[in-house]
Length: 305
Figure 1 (cartoon, rainbow, N blue to C red):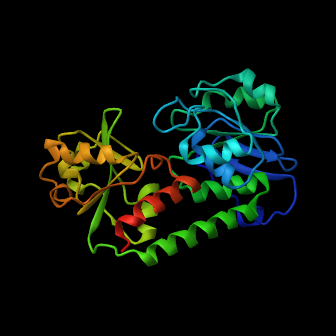
Figure 2 (figure 1 turned 135 degrees about the horizontal axis):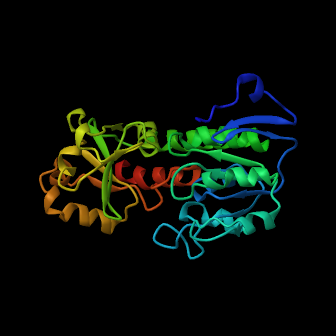
C-alpha cells in the first residue's frame, strides 16, 4: 500500500485525534506524541530536523558513513546534543528494546535494510502506534510533511523547508553552472555501480542548485540489474551509462574521486578525460535535511568563483 499524504481536510487539523494513512494501513493518534522512537536511521534525520521529541534511534553498522555509535554522520551531532539514545544496534530489530521505551509513536521503514515491516502487526497487537514509511519512493520533504503532521510539528516542516530553500537559492546565486548535463554516480559501493535517475533525491538537490541531471540512456534499460531511484549497472557497462559531461559521486571522498579517475574502464568517459568529477560528500548516500545541506555545502564551492 502506498502511503497517501493526508487529504486537505486532514492536513488542516489543528487538534487531536488525527489519522494518517501509511504503508501498514491507517494510524490514529489520540494526542500529540511525546515519546517517539525511530527504528530507521534513514528517517531519524528528518525527525531531528523537525524537533520531534525523539528518545532513541536504531543505529547502522559502524563504518565510514557513521560515527562510533552507529549514528549517521549527517545527523550525529544534533542527535548527541539532544541526548538521543541508541535503541538497538546494527539494524537488528529488538522487540524488548522497543517495549522498554513505552513509546507514544514508533517511526519505521517499509523498505531497505532497516525495514520493520515483518514486525508491525505484532507491535500493533501490543497496542504500540507504528508509522511505517517508504523512504525509497519519496523525497525527504514529502516524508517531512507526513512526519510533521503525525507529530504535530507542521510549523517545523515550514521552518526547515524555508531554510533549505533559502540555502539552496543562496548557493545557486553564487555559482557559475556549466551549460551541460551531469550524472550522479555511485561507484564501487560494496561492489556495486549505479547511476541515479533525474528524479532521485540526490539529483533533485543538484537540480534545485541549477544543474541538469541526466540518467542512463533509454537504450540501456535492458542492462539495468535493479532499479528504483537509482539504476544499478555492471562495471563494464558503467562508461556507457554515464552520459553527463560532469560526474558527481555519491558517498564519496576525494580518495574515491581519485579511484574513479584512475579506473581504466572509465578512461574514455568525457567527464574523466576533462577532469570534471566531483565528490558529493560522504553523507550523500541518503538525503535528508542535514545531508541535503551537506551536499549543497560540498558542491557549491566547486563552482563558486
